[in-house]
Every structure is written in structure tokens, then in C-alpha cells.
Amino acid sequence: MEDGVSAKELREIIRQLERKLGILEKNEMGCCGVSFAQCHAIVEIGRGKKVSLNLLADSLGLDSSTMSRTVNNLVNNGFVQRELDPGDRRYVTIQLTESGNKVFQHVEETMNNYFQGVWERIPNDKRAQILDSFQILLTAFQ
Amino acid sequence: MEDGVSAKELREIIRQLERKLGILEKNEMGCCGVSFAQCHAIVEIGRGKKVSLNLLADSLGLDSSTMSRTVNNLVNNGFVQRELDPGDRRYVTIQLTESGNKVFQHVEETMNNYFQGVWERIPNDKRAQILDSFQILLTAFQ
DNA sequence: AGAAGTAGTTGTGTGTTGCAACTATTTTAT
DNA sequence: ATAAAATAGTTGCAACACACAACTACTTCT
Image (cartoon, rainbow over all chains, first blue to last red; front, side, top):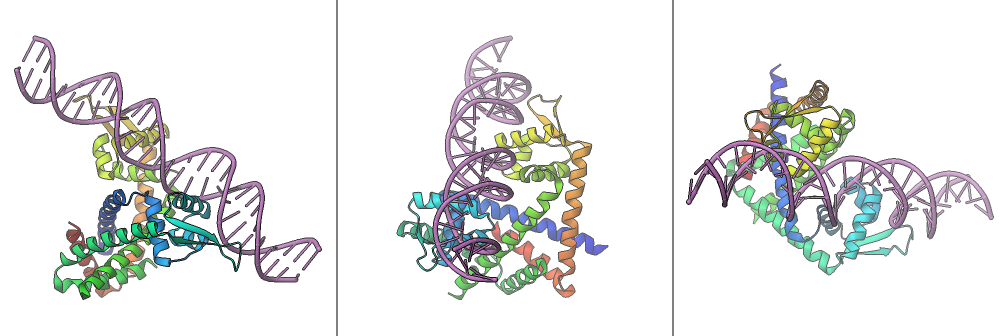
């Protein structure tokens, strides 16, 4: 049963990583002037450029009602723009305003800088191995 | 700037892992008959056997007021027991009841089984490398 | 044209969270 | 020894996050 032990090791180490990432996210939060959920949404919208509500909800793993309200807040705060899709008027297209884009850029930069720092703290000869490991682990999570 | 690219790769891959872990936690949740925050607290209490409120709050990264309420709910639901520490009566000692311990055991088992499955899906010759990689990454997060 | 399906919004209820103000107790400093 | 400072925990408050169910508006299928 040495496998059982190592599986527990894996669980524990992932737990620790989760904790660290949680702290990271909390710190990131304060800066942007938007709430947690809003920040996530902004990043997701910024990456997609132009998305529908359900797509956004799916990509964040949220109910569409929750998403609708979050987007509504973002609209009220002037970070995103919501329009009816002329092609199919059931859809709305959601995209960042200039102001929202600023937040997006800022979050991206902060996160990239942070990970740049982490990356540099990894010994040179271990870097490839780490990316490889994550890839394998991701597929093992299936 | 190839380093910048790889740091972004790292960020992205961790993002994906986070997503998977989030889904995992959601599934784990439904089973135990307790809420998300309560479940986390039970695991932490179960591990520590006997803890004070602030210790618990720290280990979960929460405000002590939030923790107090969560513990209160757990007490009301009969999962934990709260007593004044006779040695220093400012402290309370928090521990699982029998019923709470059952939940704890169940969560532990579920999680361990899950990670056992993940572990087995990792190719044999990659397992050591993965544990090693996480260890390095954790220290790089500092 | 009517039925069935899809996108999104709103009503409602629960849970989570932190800050600030409070009580109770213990420790420190004068 | 007693007043002041520190510590542990609780409660008032206000905001956010979230899902389910019921709804409207639109489109596609038959």
C-alpha cells in the first residue's frame, strides 16, 4: 500500500498549493476595485473579447442567473457593455468597455508578473519538468 | 523573452488545475450534508482534534467573526462541541462530536479515494517527478 | 401557425464574508 | 495592587455570491 501513502502525499501537496493560490487571489482582488466574481468575469470576457452570457456562465462554472446579475453589476459600474445580438435576438453580446479593459490589462499584468517571479524562482533545470508534470496531472484528473 | 512565455504557460496550466479542483470540491460538497464552509471547518477540526477558534480561523484564512458563526452553525447541527478552556477562559476548545467525526471520516475517505484514482492514472515512471515538481513549485511560491 | 426549444432576467432563499463595536478574561506596567 | 493594554471570542451590520424555479422574449421545428 505504498501507493496509498503517495496518493495522500499528492492530496496534501495540492491542498497546500490551493491555499497559496487562494491567498494570491485575495491579494489580487483588492487592487482592481471590483469584487471577486466581477474580476473573474472581466478576465474571462477580456480573453474572449465578445461572448454570450451562457458561454460566460459555462466557462466560469456558474448558473446563468448568477452570471446575469454579475454582468449587470459590471454594466452598472461601467466595465462592460451589453448588447442584443442583431443576428439572433435571444443572445446578448458582452464585451469590455475601455474602463473594463483597463482593469483587465491590470489584472493580466499583475498575474503575469507574479508568475514571472515564481518562474524565476524555479531552478532552471527543473522548469521543463514542472510544466510536464502539470500536464500529466491534468490529464490524470480527466 | 522565452521565459515570459513559459511563465504564462505555468499560469495557464495552474488556472486549469484550479478549475478542476473547484469542480472536485463542488462534487465533494453535496455528499456530506453540510455546507462548503462547514465542510472545510470539519476537516480542519478533525485534523487538529482540539483547536481554538482563532487557530481555526487562521488555518482557513478567515476572519474570526466568520469562523465564530460557522462554528456556531456546526454546533447547532451537532457536528462539533464548543467548551471553555478551563486553563484560560478566554479560549474555547472546539472538537468534533461523534456525528461530526463521521462526516470527517467520510470526507477523508472520499478525497483519498479520489486522489488514489488520480494517482493510479499517472504513469508509474512519472509519479516521483510529479511530487518533486509540486514541492519545488510550492517553495517557489514562497 | 402552433409546439418545443433556447437565451436571458427576475423572485426568492440561503450561505459567506469582513469590519467595527462589544464583552469577558488575562497579562503587563506603574 | 490596581489601572491599562492585550487577547479570544461574539454580535450588529452590510454587502456579495450563488442556485433553483418561474418568467419573458425570441427562434426553430413540425
